[in-house]
Amino acid sequence: MGCSAWTCGFNFGHLKAQSKLSVFFAMIIIFMYLFYCLNGYCDTLPRPVYDHQSNHLQNRLQEGHETESVFDAYNASSLVRGRLSDLDNNIQANNISIADNYGSKKFPQAIIIGVKKGGTRALLEFLRIHPDVRAVGAEPHFFDRFYDKGLEWYRNLMPRTLEGQITMEKTPSYFITKEAPRRVFSMDRQTKLIVVVRDPVTRAVSDYTQTLTKSPGLPSFQNLAFRNSTTGLIDTSWSAVRIGIYAKHLENWLRYFPPSRFLFVSGERLVTDPAGEMGRVQDFLGLKRVVTDKHFYFNQTKGFPCLKKPEGSSRPRCLGKSKGRPHPQIPAEVLLRLREFYRPFNLKFYQMTGQDFGWD
Image (cartoon, rainbow, N blue to C red; front, side, top):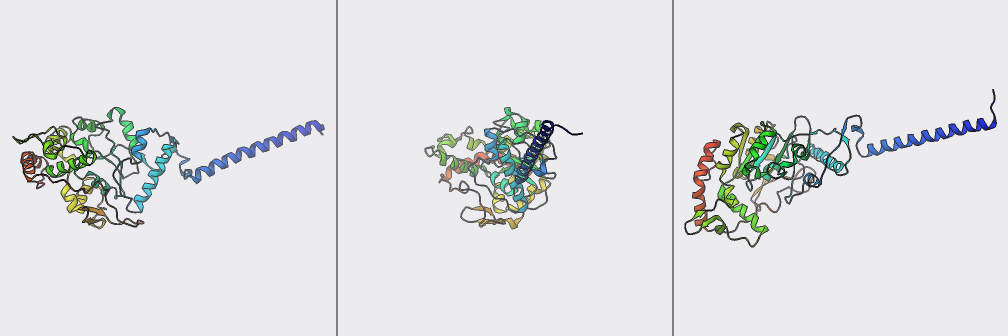
């Protein structure tokens, strides 16, 4: 049967409109597909998606907002992980939801809990050479400053890890924070705890030196160290002195964690024998000994070990300018009095840890 010119024209026009609409939607789909592929998201499309929560502080932490210089990735494996971390940060900053294709965010299985000016930054950067270690660059300060933000907030700060990788963070002030042991225990009683310790007298002077660079008008070391210069009574309320009473702080942690959950790293040996100390750390974490003496050389100018030239880099990598600062001259009698003050605490610390650190 035939059709009128008007009916045929209407049908033809209807089909033509449908065709144009189909082409339009096809072009949209193709454009979206190309956009995701060019941005490296194609592999993630079949998997479940989830939203990344972000806020100002979290972005600063994930971007490594800190004054310390950090090492570049040492080998191809860590370089790839770094690229994936950068991609993840960019996605979170733009509030884009993607599939969990690059591992998952977990609570840290190990935490460097102390001590300030003991060598924690060096230890963390040496550990980041290992392909099975993923760590937060900046100090989260969750268990001492931001605990009220909740565990989910804390986990969101962590880098993504694949199966077999360890999540880590370091915040040296945890060691002297009274509430920190209970809070870490509540998160995971199996957490491994690393404490980097150093001669408390040298540590106190280093602590003072760092503060002095920020506050040039600071009183002298001896004025801060003594309550009364005549009697020689030490002022334990001054944080530079208080931190070095290691035995007292460790007692607080041992109320919640057995000695087997701790590793005590010598800050001195981390300088003189970094590969040896790193071997102990890797064994404690259950990692293969990847970080060895082939990774280090001693920088005579700075007075501490640096990483040898990473693959693809033009020069070796050392910690930043804030490390290896020259210390001010402290009167010998002041240092001797302080050493006498620490001696009984040091001996008790040796007994508690089963290690003689040789500070006396």
